[in-house]
Image 1 (tube, rainbow, N blue to C red):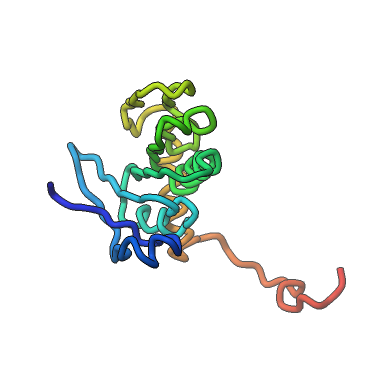
Image 2: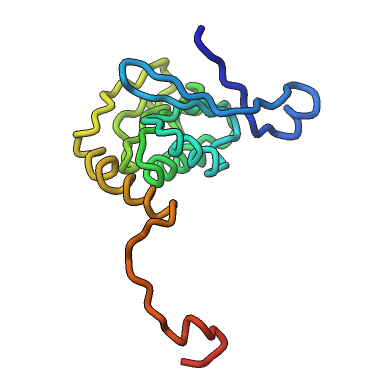
Length: 170
C-alpha cells in the first residue's frame, strides 16, 4: 500500500464517536494518470473537488454508502464538469436503481454506468484526454478556468459609472 485517504469532512455521528477526520488530500499517479480520493458525504463540498483540480488530478475517485445516492450522482456530474476532470462514483449495488456507479467525463457526461438491477458490476473506461467527452474540457475549459481563478483574466476592464455607484438608477 502506497497511501491511504481518510475522510476529512465527517458527519456529526462519525465525528462524535466513530472516526477522527483526515487532515490532507491524497493524490497518487498510476501509469501517468493522477488520481485523488474523496469519501462519504464529501460530495457535498465543492471546495474539496476544487482542491484536487489545483493538485492537477485527472480523476477523483469518490465512494459513498450515502442514503441519497441520486443526489450524489448529480453532484458528481457537476464536479466533473466544473473542474474538467473525470469523477468515478462508487456506491453499493442496493442503490443502483436510483444511482448506479459509473464514471463521469470532464464534460459532465456519463461515460459508463453499472446496471440498475442491483447486480454486482464494474464500470470500465479509458481516461483519454483526446476523446470527444474530454478534449474541449481538458484542453480549453480547464486552462481558462485556472487563469480566471488566478486573476490573470486579460479582458480589459471598462470604467462604467453604473459599476462605481450601484445605488444609481438606470
